[in-house]
Structure formats: structure tokens, C-alpha cells
Length: 71
Image (cartoon, rainbow, N blue to C red):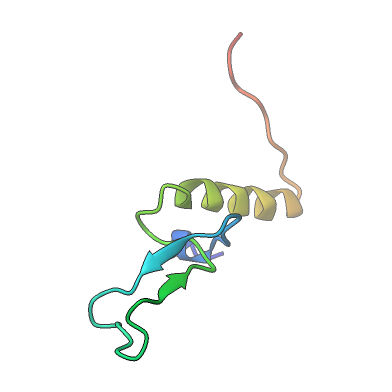
């Protein structure tokens, strides 16, 4: 598991589209947008996607979740 690139490794659960960034604009398709396959830095969904991916990895290695909220 590569923690340095954690937000870039988490798959998206919902469809997210972004405009073509400067320097990557396709002159033949100016109206097109990109659909993200994985989370990206700055997305509000990125931390949750990473948490879900990390949780899945840790539970596959035998770890368990504990609810530490106080009543």
C-alpha cells in the first residue's frame, strides 16, 4: 500500500467529472470533460475513498474495527 500517493489510489464510488485542465485541452474536443476513475487531491470525496480503501486492506490482513465513541 503506497501511502505517499494515497488519494490517487482510491477508486471512486460515484461518477466525478472535471474540466480539461490547462495544458491538456484537446483542441478537437473543446467541450469534452474527463471522468475520474480514481480519487484526486482536493476532491471532497477523496478522504472517504481513501479511508474505505485502507479499511478494506487492513481488515483483509486480520485487523478489526473498534467503535471508540463515548456514550
